[in-house]
Image (cartoon, rainbow, N blue to C red; front, side, top):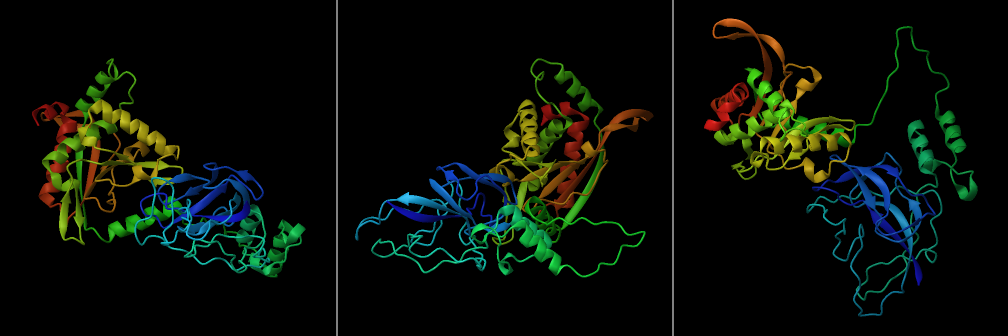
Length: 444
């Protein structure tokens, strides 16, 4: 048996993403780890994911500090394993393990995940200040034509410092590569970083004036970065048109109360959003243009047979839009159950990446915040998005007489490249008609 230093590279954990942020480590140098043990949590533009360990052995070094964004394919941790000696010449070399590059240059990833062609990018390794382990101390397998293992030249190492010290250095603007650690074995300590930070600070800082206030800065990353990029791309790619409609939903709210008292719906979270979702699915059958995609590259409009319904949800990590798959095939009860589970999962931060992609139509419920209406921006690749305002009593004319009714404002934004004003108006009117008189659905 020989000691082998293995490096686990950042895998693509969903739909061709090219980078992820290491949120927290669950292991430290010197810890013993087993295959599939969770070693860290990462955050991509779409979800938080726990990474399992691909090797059994001892943690050698954490190559990435918490809060650092890493490109897919870049090493994040090294693990010392005990392995058999290299095979004889001509013997078949085993395939690469998770995160390891094979002879064809491709990286083996987690089961069920994998980067799209051309999506893997590697960032250059940081320069080293500490001496790297000697080549004869850390033998590393290198793919050779005869399948043998050779010793590499001396490797570069990252500065020796624990993750909290690395974060402190980042906050103070201190370059760890410029420090010589005073700790055991040359490890950089908190005092080393604080001293360097004090030396780098300006001699005097003007006192703030009486009206001056503090500021707080946060890095733009994760869900917020992805949301911003998507919204900018959508706003400046698809020509948006927004139409508004006030709807008398008194009959729908009365139906909701009757159903909630029935045995079938006794244990179902039957929210007004379920009725809106059902109305959207029914109306989309009559106006298929709202459930379509403008494929610029192919010069085609893609019409979808099924509605992959996105529901915009505000979560502690930012705005997410998980999907109800094949929503048009679900009954009202099934929709209500799906919506309840979907939003609860999103708010807990456990939505899998696969549930955040592949939508064809989106509903955003701004009414839960007491807002009457808004002008929603399309999710990239979709043709329409419906904003649902607050449901509340309002004066309304019924049969020529003024009455108090339960009213809701709807706002539909659509891509004018593939949805004309007539089609958008018809769709919005259909949704409104179904919410005004839910019995109308029996005639469609």
